[in-house]
Image (spheres, rainbow, N blue to C red):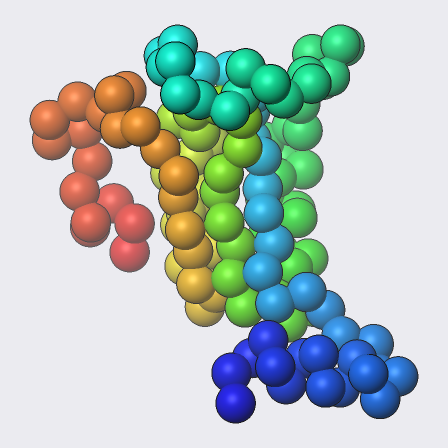
Length: 119
């Protein structure tokens, strides 16, 4: 059985279970204007408020402590618009969680970072 199935079965027995996967939305800003992008239809926070870098890192630490297995860095924008993106990836890896990053890669320059940057 996979982690999700086990979690659901335990939850059905009344046990409190952490989520298996957590999604982080670091930004709704994007450097592209793709015609097919669903972000045009996402209602944005009128205040423009986003979580601070410190809060994003705290959420990763808290998720790790709760037993979350995977963190997806996604959202309605390009995560690399936030300077913290590489640090988020490092923290996820250091916490022994699986990670996923949804990016259009247009903000990365050739040789801007390598796998060794995310040890």
